[in-house]
Image (cartoon, rainbow, N blue to C red; front, top):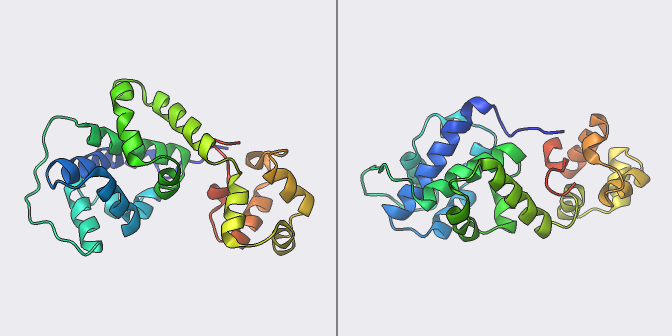
Length: 215
């Protein structure tokens, strides 16, 4: 089951604005890409883009996104908003990551756990002229390599509960929980009501438990 992060109507604008965001922060304001990416995730603005909040996707330019990120980080931007026509590696990083987050409906924070932004920037030289599907495939492989466990196990362990506790609180059988975590049963093909029950117990979205790159 493929569930995109938000309406495709916002995708191109999200890609452009995130590209401009990284380009402006790095090449005009002289932040390192790791610095601005860390602030982007820590500011909470990343989570708003993940759900397609039009205020941050359609209501702000890339430069204004940077201003908001810096303000939430206790910093201030005193330089004017100027963007250049040249598409830099930083622009491509933001553009490509916006697509991947939308396509796989996985958080930027989770992506960052597995693949640091400077590693993604290095992918520019071999992938910026290729179809975006090649980037998706490469990212999937890296995500799968890093996250050996299922999303269900990941969120259960973060919540700090056992398989038995999850089964009891959700009403899903212990055997089903075990089979899902062992990848003997595909959660993407499991009844929605079961996944919803587990998501409520784990305090996450149903989409967070579905698998994409490591099913």
